[in-house]
Amino acid sequence: MPTWLRASSRGRGSSYAQEPLGLELDQTVFALDSTTIDLCLSLFPWARFRSTKAAVKLHTLLDVRGPIPTMITISEGKMADVRILDTLIPEPGAFYVMDRGYVDFQRLYQIVLATAFFVTRTKSGIKLNRLESRPVDRTTGLRSDHIVWLTNAQTVMHYPDRLRRVTYRDPEDGKVLVFLTNNFDLPALTIAKLYKLRWRVELFFKWIKQNLRIKHFFGTSDNAVKTQVWIAICVYVLVAIIRKELRLDLSLSQILQVVSVNAFEQVPLAELVANTASQDDPLESRNQLMLWHL
Image (cartoon, rainbow, N blue to C red; front, side, top):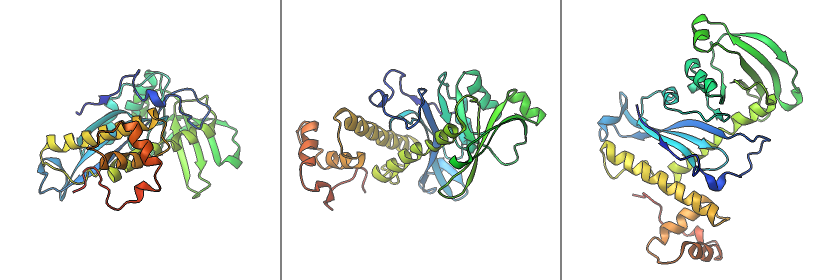
């Protein structure tokens, strides 16, 4: 079982602690997800994922108020996402937003026992008995808000408590989403909006893969691959901190480009970025370097 790289509760994303969440919510909200980093099986036989494919997985817990990860681990590609819940230490009162790949009621009940909350999507085949129906405003996209109970006797042994089921129709694509949570106090629409925040961890994965080029590796050993991924993550975190501490209007990608093409310049970072920002479209140059570009 892999171990997490954890940020301390004091230092974890402190620069972003007061960032607006977009919801009237005081509690911390975490998004949990993973992404697969594909590898060549002939070069990385130790990372066999499928019969013709190798891979490792990057599991990330992101505080959605800021772009800095709270916890990260790298595992073998074939490891099931839900097993990461075994290493999670829930923060009391916090919300953990996950997709349905993490639906395991025995593990989810550990979040309940820690007095924390989860928001996830239900899986097909899960049988629930409706105990109560709450009124909803259907003009908001909500379709139902039910208090439910698991009907399978073995599942009830693992999760001997009520659940809340919220059904929501996405106005953009018309897709109907069904959420499960152990929070019974927030408005049903807030539960749906909380799940939408999960996409911020997807944006983190996208940025890492597009900007730090972790599809090509300098070494082929387990240690070499993980070291390069950790370096990429460290670069991301440093750029995110720089952007916040210097109150820059540049995007993370722009800051990374500025730093990468001036890596050997002995100029204070604040001055370097300020000088770059004052130029006319300095980031449009086709000759700029990217980290890990091979």
